[in-house]
Length: 551
Image (cartoon, rainbow, N blue to C red; front, side, top):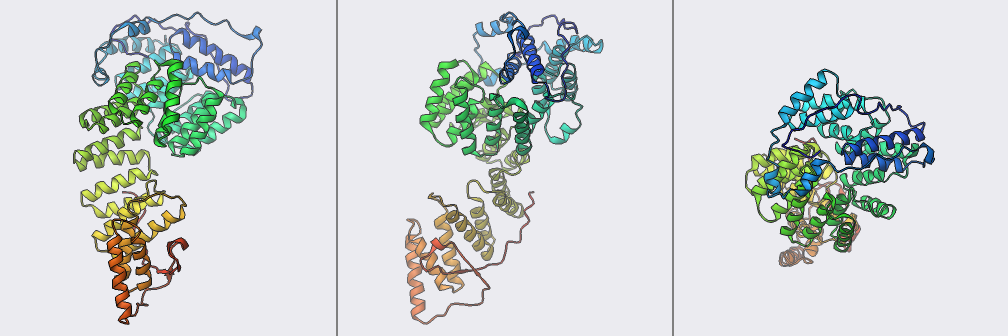
């Protein structure tokens, strides 16, 4: 709902909307379709366009009804609030606009509270009351009212969505007294996706597909978003591409699709998507975000920020636009504007780990480690298995000279699946700093093993560093074969070529002098077969004595 500074009389009674009851199962899909079509009409009459579209789209995925059973559509009228917004020239930027308060909210709350106590509010009235309470930051009261709204009018998706935005964790969800209705299954699937409980969310969506919603483009898009959240980029891209074939005029979630194209640097595909959405509707929030991502990929950050600002003029509570605009301000070195944008994103949704992570990065640039530690910890709490959050935490602890915590973070980042292949290198360098040579060697060996075992031909910047350290380590241990193998690998890199050649000359000189290698180190530890021509084994060094428990 658009925020307004004007007050209109609130007359919302139980007689306005008919009572819509829903069963807890999916046994009668014909009845479910009738209910969805009815609520789509009621929400459209009241200007609740998102809920209306969601209900109509879901109804469209179910088998068709005979014409005789269809209700006539209500007349479409433009709301005064929508017309006012369209005709108003907004001179405020989105950052300033977000600070404007609606002075009418308190008066509106008093009027709605009286009607609530007198039990004069129907499902839509309760929804409106909940929105007013949420805008006044009365979160607990807003949750209670939205739960009541779902009991009175369970088919109104908007009330479920508002409730979803106020739930911060699974424990909070357990204590909600939700109605026993089939709409609850859609809500749970959505909230699980938002809470990063992806396995549970995918299971819920699969159950909904099995009971008859297999043609729902909403469910397919939500599954793609779920895979996006766990950074399974290939799977998410595949689902979005298939969705585009099924529904080429769909705009919802296309900004998420553009994020995936951006990550993969797929310029031509992103350009095509941006042009296509412009032809469909260039005044949609998602379209503006897609165009913004396109310009960002072309390193035209001023233009990108402009389109994210346009998105926020269309919808000041659109989470993705705030976060993406923060990223663009970071690229332009405008840290104060970036902080403001990220904070607005958190105001919209406290579960947005990208905003918390962005704030951490901003304060890291400002050399304020205690601040960035706080924000990185918040991001890590939301994404406990994301290695990027753990590596950032480790770097922060390292700057604060809390080396034990830093080691735990780096090791945990490797244990959960290091996306950027940097956790082991950082851990090895930390051991180097602490003169723990065996542990450092083990980290470098594991790092090299991971690079060679993944089968990708990718240039890793720290590969030469790893071989240089191992060559020197084995040289000090008088393990000539292993030192020679690593020194030869050093010769393949520009920055370590001369050191590798010098070490090979030293090894040859010592061998000519009759210096014998040591045999005091225990059982062999093999590097990948492709590492050396003669497959010379290295030695096993002592295991890392680190806990994988995060700080």
